[in-house]
Amino acid sequence: MNLPTVALIALALGTILGLTLGVPLGRRVERVAWYADAALTRARTTGWLIRDLAGYATATALTIAAAAFVVWALTR
Image 1 (cartoon, helix red, strand yellow):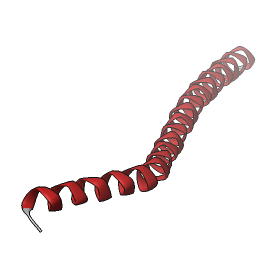
Image 2 (spheres, one colour):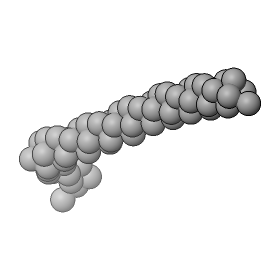
Image 3 (tube, rainbow, N blue to C red):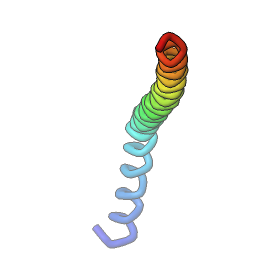
Protein backbone atom coordinates (compact mmCIF):
# COMPACT_ATOMS: atom_id res chain seq x y z
CA MET A 1 0.00 0.00 0.00
CA ASN A 2 1.25 3.40 -0.82
CA LEU A 3 1.39 6.35 1.55
CA PRO A 4 -1.69 8.26 0.27
CA THR A 5 -3.88 5.16 0.69
CA VAL A 6 -2.68 4.60 4.25
CA ALA A 7 -3.27 8.30 5.01
CA LEU A 8 -6.84 8.16 3.66
CA ILE A 9 -7.63 4.96 5.60
CA ALA A 10 -6.22 6.51 8.79
CA LEU A 11 -8.24 9.67 8.17
CA ALA A 12 -11.42 7.65 7.60
CA LEU A 13 -10.85 5.57 10.75
CA GLY A 14 -10.05 8.68 12.76
CA THR A 15 -13.23 10.35 11.52
CA ILE A 16 -15.38 7.33 12.35
CA LEU A 17 -13.83 6.95 15.81
CA GLY A 18 -14.05 10.69 16.41
CA LEU A 19 -17.74 10.76 15.57
CA THR A 20 -18.65 7.64 17.53
CA LEU A 21 -16.51 8.30 20.60
CA GLY A 22 -16.23 12.08 20.50
CA VAL A 23 -19.86 12.94 21.12
CA PRO A 24 -20.32 10.84 24.27
CA LEU A 25 -16.89 11.91 25.53
CA GLY A 26 -17.78 15.56 24.87
CA ARG A 27 -21.02 15.13 26.80
CA ARG A 28 -19.17 13.52 29.70
CA VAL A 29 -16.65 16.35 29.80
CA GLU A 30 -19.49 18.87 29.68
CA ARG A 31 -21.30 17.05 32.50
CA VAL A 32 -18.15 16.96 34.65
CA ALA A 33 -17.59 20.66 34.02
CA TRP A 34 -21.21 21.41 34.98
CA TYR A 35 -20.90 19.42 38.22
CA ALA A 36 -17.61 21.16 39.04
CA ASP A 37 -19.18 24.57 38.43
CA ALA A 38 -22.19 23.64 40.57
CA ALA A 39 -19.90 22.45 43.38
CA LEU A 40 -17.91 25.69 43.25
CA THR A 41 -21.11 27.73 43.32
CA ARG A 42 -22.37 25.79 46.34
CA ALA A 43 -19.04 26.27 48.12
CA ARG A 44 -19.03 29.97 47.32
CA THR A 45 -22.62 30.36 48.50
CA THR A 46 -21.89 28.37 51.65
CA GLY A 47 -18.85 30.55 52.31
CA TRP A 48 -20.91 33.70 51.93
CA LEU A 49 -23.60 32.25 54.20
CA ILE A 50 -21.05 31.35 56.87
CA ARG A 51 -19.45 34.79 56.61
CA ASP A 52 -22.83 36.53 56.91
CA LEU A 53 -23.95 34.36 59.82
CA ALA A 54 -20.63 34.91 61.59
CA GLY A 55 -21.06 38.65 61.14
CA TYR A 56 -24.60 38.52 62.54
CA ALA A 57 -23.44 36.39 65.47
CA THR A 58 -20.60 38.80 66.23
CA ALA A 59 -22.91 41.82 66.08
CA THR A 60 -25.43 40.06 68.32
CA ALA A 61 -22.75 39.08 70.83
CA LEU A 62 -21.38 42.64 70.95
CA THR A 63 -24.89 44.06 71.42
CA ILE A 64 -25.64 41.65 74.25
CA ALA A 65 -22.28 42.38 75.87
CA ALA A 66 -22.86 46.15 75.66
CA ALA A 67 -26.37 45.80 77.09
CA ALA A 68 -25.08 43.58 79.91
CA PHE A 69 -22.36 46.13 80.70
CA VAL A 70 -24.89 48.97 80.78
CA VAL A 71 -27.20 46.99 83.08
CA TRP A 72 -24.25 46.04 85.30
CA ALA A 73 -23.02 49.67 85.43
CA LEU A 74 -26.49 50.97 86.31
CA THR A 75 -27.01 48.46 89.09
CA ARG A 76 -23.72 49.21 90.84
